Amino acid sequence: MNNFYIVANLKMNKSFEESKLYLKFLQNKVKNSKCEIILFPSNISLAYFHENIYGMQVGVQDIDYRSEGEGTGSISASQVKDICNYVLIGHSERRIIFSEDNKLLNKKLKSSWKNNLKTIFCVGEDINIRNSGAKAVEDYIVKQLVNSLENDSDWQNLIVAYEPIWAIGTGKPADASQIKDVLEIIKQTLNKLSNNINIPILYGGSINEENFQNYKNQRNIDGLLIGSSSLNPDVLSKIINNI
Ligand code: PGA
Image 1 (cartoon, rainbow, N blue to C red):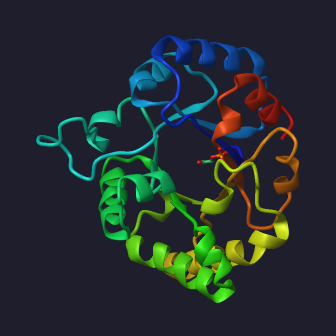
Image 2 (cartoon, helix red, strand yellow):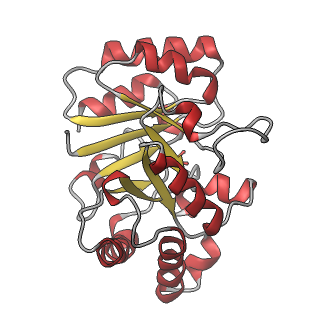
């Protein structure tokens, strides 16, 4: 497997037709990438992506923690396991807009692993916690990890994404000095919990064509989670082709 991840979170964007064009354009532009590329389209396009993608992986942006039955409008890991191999769990938009807490996210992680999906589990503090100082940030992030992960988690199928909320969609990416201590804390916490299994860590928050190179060689960063800049397949392909 390739060892640097480029993850595109398309969020609640693009119609089915737009998604088809997006995938076609991206596939034409991306050549011999050295990265592990994972695309997270909205649910309407999952099956199409699954059938038409090559050299890249498909993921679902969220799942219900239950497996079937009641849950109008929801989608479960057991339903998507045939068309996806990744799932995003605990994105800050799910935590904030849909009030998802660490306990619920623990159930979602378990359901994903039960269905052999690889999970990208997102953590990150908001601006108030950041402004309260390094100790407050550390306590918050460690709690997010410890309260959702357990000793018997499926560590081989886990990737953690550090996405400081103050950097998401703001055009103000975190610079190396602002995040290096948090990345180290995440690494150490995961090492402790998993008994030293090497779990990849991604950074996400206002990554774009101009700044992605800054993160490439940063310690404890194994990939990038890209939102807004991934919506333009031309921009995304340039990032991928230049990693
Ligand atoms: P952004 O989003 O790249 O637009 O900041 C990242 C994310 O929400 O995962």
